[in-house]
Image (cartoon, rainbow, N blue to C red; front, top):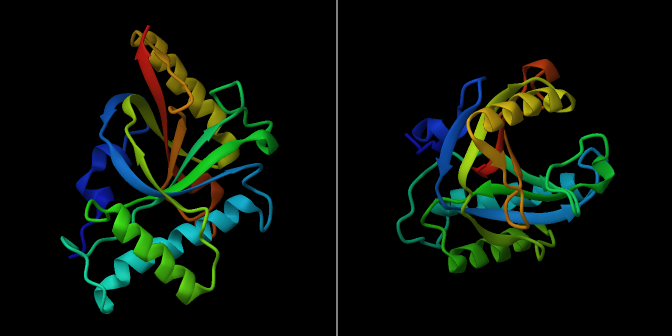
Length: 210
């Protein structure tokens, strides 16, 4: 059976619908940075998703080609993730999506080194005819965070975030948004196939002791 990160690391991908504290380990991602409203049709954000999956599946399906990756194991491509923030304001304002800064990303298996990543980008560019020059190998060490499972549309997230914020304060912490620590979401549902009210999204924020 292919290795499934969601099943093997449930504490990271399947939290409960009530807030909780978590220590998040360092992880590697294929990532693309951008700005603007993620809902813009054919916009930079939606284009970034296509690019991320092109690279991710090139790595996964390398087992079918001649390129051999040391330590390769078959796996389920992890879910799409996103880091979100606004200039001079760590917490994103969901009423002003045009001013979002974002990093769209997908987790990479541990066997993917920067050299393997460079191969995958070149291979995906050649096979898909895509310009992937904006894709990067990103290492993120989130550390201490609070998280919650949000069930519902993306537009209804603020209510869940308010619940998470209140939990953080009550637990003796405060949000710790910085230039390298951002609002984080993990998208467990495909909005093209799942009704908005049933979509599941992990919401995670960085924290520190008050």
